[in-house]
Each structure stands twice: as structure tokens, then as C-alpha cells.
Image 1 (cartoon, one colour):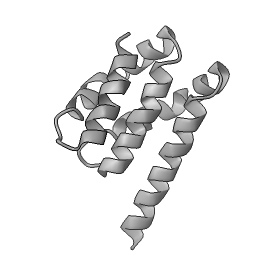
Image 2 (image 1 turned 90 degrees about the horizontal axis):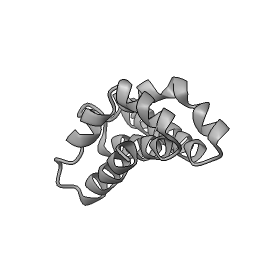
Image 3 (image 1 turned 90 degrees about the vertical axis):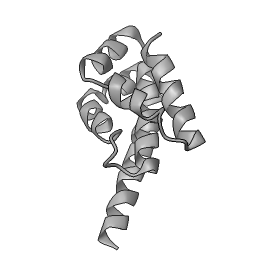
Length: 105
């Protein structure tokens, strides 16, 4: 039960960060301290829904401007996002592909 509760809280937190990242540029830039945590949850140790929501948040950040894309690249977002393309779960691959396209534009 505790693990499920933690996963739900992570998912809700990632969802909130996704919405903030979709806001105005100042709000998106305010997420800079959270970027390493979002990147860390892209890995295989995270649940698929949490990883997908983190990818969505990072895609919103990457879509904001070149400066934030460079920060994400420096912090190592590219490889974990690319690895998310390997699973066969269609929505995860689609979200990772979208986030990668924003990251490399």
C-alpha cells in the first residue's frame, strides 16, 4: 500500500510540474531546480506512468526556448528520453518522441 501511495504522489507531482511547464516562460524557468528529479524518474526504475508524465513535463520545458533545451541536454535528458523509445507501450513511445523532438529543435 505504501509503495502505491508513493507512486501516486510522484505521478501527481509530475502532473503538476507538467502543467506549470506549460505556463508562461517565467513559470517554466522556475522549474529549473526540479529538472534533475524529472530526468531521474525517466529511468527503468520508475513506473511507466511516472516516467511518461516526467517526459511530458520535460517536453514542455524543452519547448519553451533554446536556453532551457541546453540546460536539459547538459543535465543528461537526451539518453533517458531516447531509451523510453524502446518499450512497446505506444503512449510512452509517443510521449518520449514528442519530448525528444522539442529537445532537439
